[in-house]
Length: 426
Image 1 (cartoon, rainbow, N blue to C red):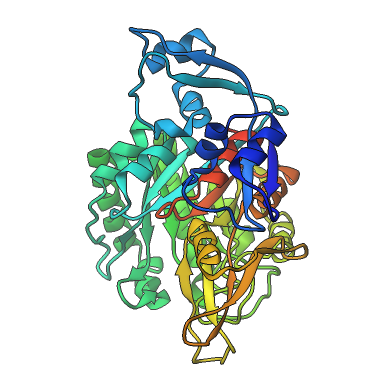
Image 2 (cartoon, helix red, strand yellow; image 1 turned 45 degrees about the horizontal axis):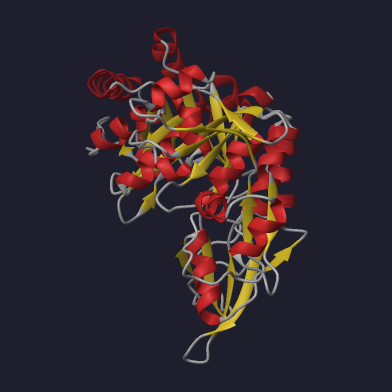
């Protein structure tokens, strides 16, 4: 596997020739539009097939996988043009294996809203260990808000991704609320009511685990929150339902601030089966322009977490988005616009910008001036920045990575993930 960074004069043809692969292989792995020019600084993932198979009349994907010592999920991952669909035709060429180093095992979590494009989720599911439909919000009386999650669960399971029941303290149009869950965390009766409702959903929706995302927990509720997670694990763990918890990105036990003080890494680490580090949003919608997940900051969170929690319980959060900030930045006034990673490349193409790469942050960026004369700065993710994050997770022996979120395409990420890692099944 190679990461090729486009330079002036490059074309899909010249890049394919350089690495000894077909143009269709470059296009397929990176989901390129052949009618669009490449952007200087754009990353492309290049995978070189080691063995292929030509589809014969009467073949099915399942039979092809079985005959060649592969799982159906592996076959989907090595042939992204399938889009997670089983439709094949005689004469079609499928990649069975690529020339690459042995892949390291890694678990992969993804989040999606019910409004996700179904074709996109179907194509992504084979790369996932678990899928969390977002979100059932708790109510003041120990109930849960409704969620149209059936399609997400079905698509995830068809691709081999086990669904997790995601509960949060998110109030629609307001944000996460520590006050909302304060009564719940301090009232066993409300917790029993909530767990009964969760039991109904686990049975009715065939969920395979529980994912808890309580943010801005009140500082005085830190220990109560851990006790609640321990109680959930005690109730559902013996039945085979692991409990996941999302952790805010902390770098010390005494870190101050409303976002941080309600999450005690040590206590939550002892209480839960798995913990996702939300290692993103350093660059955020109301903040100054910077990388969403600068690698030194991410590493600092991981290194602190490892002093409190075993590596085998930890999952590294990875952002699947970027931001476009108007300049100059004015605190309290400037508001960035979120965009997809392929969308950032498209924007650079439209405005004639060359993509730069910050070696310290390990993230791509560019600047441009819009039609109104306003300067902008864009930070996003590309193949090199994702490789840095996946390498960090593998370096420290973490259980997995978790993508926020799956609502937007990011084809080079999935090609890179398949090259570097062997996705664990649930």
